[in-house]
Image (cartoon, rainbow, N blue to C red; front, side, top):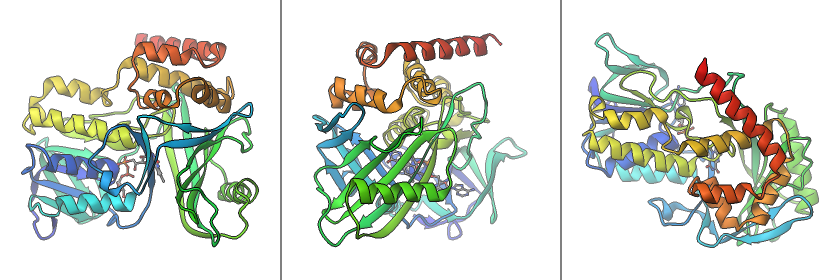
Length: 408
Ligand SMILES: Cc1cc2nc3c(=O)[nH]c(=O)nc-3n(C[C@H](O)[C@H](O)[C@H](O)COP(=O)(O)OP(=O)(O)OC[C@H]3O[C@@H](n4cnc5c(N)ncnc54)[C@H](O)[C@@H]3O)c2cc1C
């Protein structure tokens, strides 16, 4: 890998605007594919040396990133409604934690041997077509052109169309360190709904790194953000009252806002320009999870690109799937919209819905469901365990809205 100024050339095969989760995953899978010799430029505004995110996800199979998994667990604590409080085995799955700094470093190392991949630290000003109808990226340092495709993870949809369900997952977490052992590092808390719900979906999760160190994160699914001090107060009170820890140091702070929306994303705004990552709608609307989804979708993209020999114009069949964006069956998107509507309209307490899901089904089955790997029959069986009336109301609203939007 070289820096763009060293190897500057006006044209690349692919340009990846935004070298975060989706952008670097794409560079990584391309470098492992039959397109490994494609000329690629990755542009990001930051060097990606800091740990800006902590990714948690579950997997049943080993993956390319196993060597950088910082923690992995065979079960999770769940504290829900109606005094349901249990450590749940997750059978075939492992709950895993990757620090983003390790992920960026892992990928840089994997692609650093490749002279055909360049990296530019710069701000992307725009991604557009040039006068010859070729995709290009404007940065503060110049214009970079792609002969095939610009993959863009820097654009953000505004997600403000009132015809769709618009929520946000917003959170703040502290990595805290204690002098005395305070955590069981073999037992993370995935959902603790014991915090005041305020008619929203609020929970805390605790990811122990060691007996004296853990990430404690306060999370809300709602349609409005809070003053920063509210997250701090919630964290303080959770740590002192729930975890009974009085002496601790805050080692790191993590904050984030993730869109939870069923508004369709523009996947291909123009020929030769493809939105990826959050910009491409990879976030699961009803949960805000996207690590596993991103890996799957990007692998599919690379497979399709390989078939098309990297040529944007010659993958007509695949382009349909790309436009759809997520390679996920329609009924899954429908279920996602329904769950989102139930939560947004507060038709039933989210705390109770998640509790029912995890307590009335095999927990691993719910992880499979959240990963969209369950069959239609399995989904129907799972839906049988949630309160039927609120879900029927939301199903009616969502289906009616879809028909109305289709007919307009
Ligand atoms: C703090 C946090 C924690 C999360 N934890 C989880 C989790 O545990 N599990 C899970 O499944 N999902 C999680 N998510 C959701 C999701 O996995 C992440 O948001 C993920 O990083 C999205 O990938 P992305 O490539 O779309 O965006 P990013 O990873 O943010 O990458 C976008 C990149 O574009 C760059 N960029 C943006 N604008 C410009 C510009 N104008 N010029 C140049 N560069 C630019 C940024 O620097 C960044 O590197 C989390 C999100 C956040 C914010």
